[in-house]
Length: 214
Image (cartoon, rainbow, N blue to C red; front, side, top):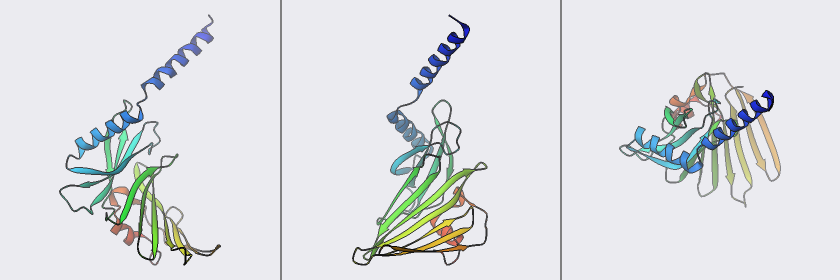
């Protein structure tokens, strides 16, 4: 056997071993729950655990929503745990309160690029609404880089509206939908330092967002 073929076989066997060592979905969930419970014994998970690679280092990280059992039910926070090479997790960052409420549904998820999102939705008598906060790992910090906001009326009153805010470009788009006709208004707003996850809370966002845009 030539040296070249031998090296190819060694590489192939190594890749199989690495694949076999990857944890299953159930194992990841159990490991994440164990880490969360150890780090925050007085807190309770809200919704499902989200897995992704937020810092693009090739290891699996996870994010959860949780509230402290000793505090107000409304005190719901985003918690981020980074993965290690041996498939364990360690706590990394926590947000401020995202403002929990019995009429508001909230969840966290990753996209394929490793960005993390906080999704909130609710409804009232006239309409429903959605908010999607976009966080990204930049320069060793998790920062808020954008938010999508939508308000959707009942079918007999089809006037939907929304806002898209990009904190990287300091651009804002207001949109209004009447029937099938969508009108957009684009604006620039003064640049500000990006809001870090540990600085983020729902109240802080309302103060941070461009005036008149929310």
